[in-house]
Length: 310
Image 1 (tube, rainbow, N blue to C red):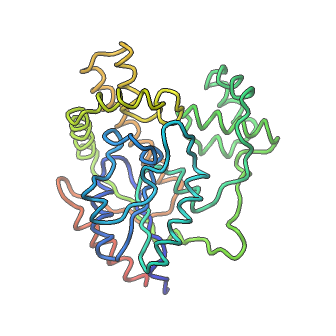
Image 2: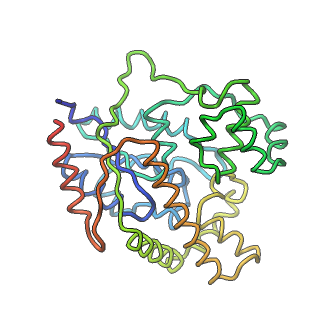
Image 3: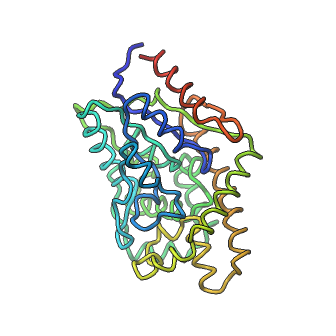
């Protein structure tokens, strides 16, 4: 099968697996530009805790959808999808290849499958739902929309609440709130999708090292500086692992050593959920990275696979 060499490439996987390093090497091989698929890297100021690409990396390869929102703004999958489509058009117009790289599965899904014209949040209903225990919300979701209940991250209160909110506002299952791509617009193929994995012990070691580096690099001080900019009022950003725990530390809930350990635990749990989501929700070619290396080999394998497709 012959494919347009400028069609997007999708590179996904759990946090700390090494996606960014592979994406940079791959972009150099295919003349690509990188589109970040990260629900936290979109926010200006969330730098250390999101492992945002460095200035040198962004100078090496153009990156998109990084630092596109202030902390006092809302940002969601619908906005991501709109901006991503614009970025793809601009990248392809330059004769380059868009490379989607990140770990926010719902954003991948939003771009590939589209999102419905779901109603905006209803403040009064939102307050009512926020007072309901998560277990009760999940029970309602299971009854009214079993399909969504089976697929949704049941440990993410924000997503569960939003699904129930949309169901109550529209009277329709949340799983039906999906829009097709506009007529005349070619939906991108998910065939060029690759998932990165590592051995469990290797990935956990990388997570430990990453968290330690974040705190050494000034995560606590960065969090302090972001509070006046609206960090605590942003319901999305305050869910970011690292920032959430540091805020709790600053409010006296945990000591610094306890906070660092808690961030490591939450990150390991999150990486496991990411991997489960990608395996269930996306069709990808999985590539195993070797301990302490693997980026070059992974980029080579992906490049060869793409060459066979083209």
